[in-house]
Length: 192
Image 1 (tube, one colour):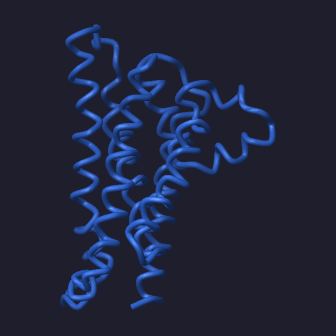
Image 2: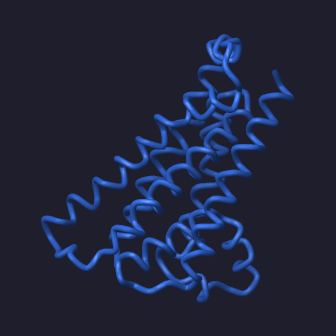
């Protein structure tokens, strides 16, 4: 029961903060401005910039799975669900980091802002206890967080059952990725 949470948390903590801090640091040193001068479309440039953090998140997710394989039997895991879920959680976390990075100007603001999103997400997304057990006024906030849908997919893939339909979880994660990426691009266009 602990493994889906470890996978999700390793992705979230690895990607969100990493990209938020590195891009903010690049902005302070003006290397981000030089990057924006390159003769390729901004969308492609930002996808290339974020792809490293997405891969980092995927590798972070593999660490608890590999370590658990030495301790428990993982033969009942649904890998067809885990692989795209890990990718989408990594992408959503990375695009959240990009959104944070283009919204702040100082590195300490990026760290504070990323913690502002990450820590509530840990407790409200259903990793430690089901979303249905949350007080009624917190449930809408829970469903406004991308990790809620990723955690639900992972729990289903590890044989713990899903609270929501799988297609809805994947659709929500794709929507979060798209919205965060588009908002980040808009902020870049507006500020630079």
